[in-house]
Image (tube, rainbow, N blue to C red; front, side, top):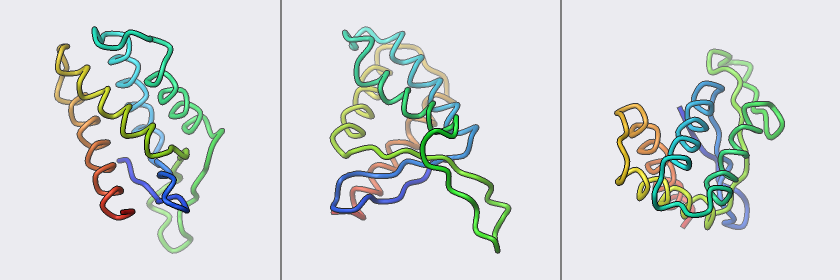
Length: 125
């Protein structure tokens, strides 16, 4: 499952998740980027988001260790993303998915991302 932490000075969020959640999000972003008729620049914003997600689960960004008293949580990985970037790319994902066939699993990943962003915006502002 995905989660977040707010960055200082209202810059954006630290998007975090376990290995499997980030892998699935990475796959969804790539699938939408490749199959979208709306995305003209296939090397643009969606691919940059996928790159950061991949670097996070490859342990090249933030590694969040579980608290000592609650080790069942497991290790989580994350990366920092600014508000304009995450808002625009999540909207691009949703708009693109309207014009392509997607399954419930893909929809649930994007809904989770959108819900997380909405919650973070309400908390930050």
